[in-house]
Structures are given as structure tokens and as C-alpha cells.
Image (cartoon, rainbow, N blue to C red; front, side, top):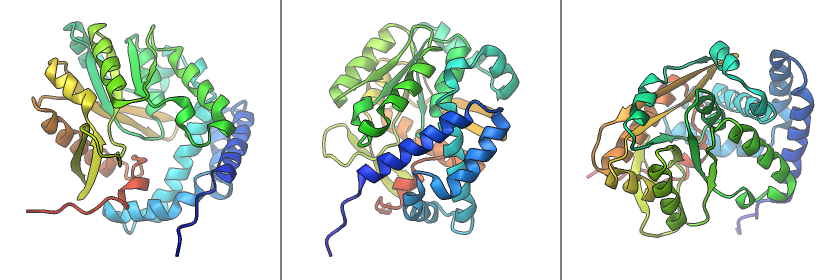
Length: 303
């Protein structure tokens, strides 16, 4: 039987409607807005069609018993992400002091060495909030990112994507999102960011299907994940310090966790990167957006 082509038109329309509702709720007190939109997400979330993929990924990661609760948490976190898209521009250092647990002094010390720093993080509901929080701490933030228009539903939610990026970038202390079209361009932008001694965020957990020289396979939850590594290879070649971490949410608050990577080779960096992903997922199993991709990846062949 031929596979049914996914209806991006309907998906885009549902997503736009959900964002329009989030924008209205964003004017309410935050606890009320989160409660209302989280309840609505149970029946109106644009992610509902992803449930089977999420379940397959949760099973692959060993979360068979927990997956229904994790799915509800996934929908709730996405609802909070949608609300945050309308709040990033007005966040302040005072907000961070009240709502975020973080020790950024080690990161400041790394940047003080004058070589820049690559902060490896993951696709999760709050990676944009992570960038914003670090920027509000006064650090110069740059973020490697796919072009806005690369979203298959850009025609429906493009203005919201742009608004999200503008709201976060406001706090980057002169930094910006670095939108790249090709791996070669990403490497060029990475080199320039390090020459400017910036803190560069990179998300290297997305599976790359196209065969090219930048692809490597690494293990996560016993599955093979083919990912791009060009920017990390460059960081290792230039002896730029690397850290890995993410932002965990609990209620109204967030906890920023990260640690330095002391490995020398880019292969070791990637192994440590995915090991940290598994560590964060033991703390919050619904943390990683990649559970949606994991079930489709082949099992690791052990020699």
C-alpha cells in the first residue's frame, strides 16, 4: 500500500490556530494561561498527530510504562513553549533571578579565556528560552539555526517563527541567530563566531538522512542516530571549549544544567553529548523532542 502523503496544509492551519489562542492567553497571568492552554492541548494541540511516533520513541528509550504520562507532559511543555514565544521579548534579569536556577560563573570563566565557547544543547521545548536566559545573564549569544523559511508550514506560521526569534535575539547582547543553508555555510559561521569570542549554541541531535561527508552515526538509547558534526569538528580543531546541557522545567521555574566536555576528539565529544542527553532524559523523560524521531532509527548493531 502506498504511503499517504502528509497533509502539511491542515497541520499548518491547526498550528496557526493554536498559536492564535496562545497569543490571547498570553495576556493572562502566567499560571492561568498555562493551565488553560495545557488543557486545550489535550484536544487541540497541533502535535496530536505525532502520538504514534512519540510512543514508538518512548518504547525505544525504555519508557514503555510511562509513555502515556510522558505524552501528556510533551503536550503541556509544547503549550508552555507556545506561550513563551509571546513572552521572551519582555523577560528581564529580575525574571531570571526569580524563576531560574543556574550557575553561569563557570561559563563566564570559560569565555574569559578568550577562545569563545560552543554550547551543545538539544531540541527540547525550552531551547529558545535557554538562549534567552543566557543572554539575560550578559553573555554574547549566537545560535546556529536552520532558516525560518525551511519550515514546511512557514506560509501558515512564519510571522510567529520570526516573532519568536526576534523576542529571544533582543537579549543576545549583540549576538544573533545564524541561519545557514548548507553544512559548509554552518562551518563558516561557526569559525567566524569563535573568532569573535562568542558563545555559540548548536543543536546536533537531529537525524540527517542525506549521505554526505558531515554525517556520523552515534548511539542514543541503543539506536543509531546519524547527525551532522562539521561545526563540532571545527571547534575541536580550533581547541574551542565545549559544554553540553539544557533547560529543565518544573512548574513555574526552570533549572539550567550544563557541564564542560573535556574530550579531545569530535567522536568523543559526540559520545559524551548523547550520554548527557540520556542523563537529562532520566531526570525528565519527556525532555527530548527527538523521541519523535528515535523509533524510526535502526537499532545499534553491537559487535
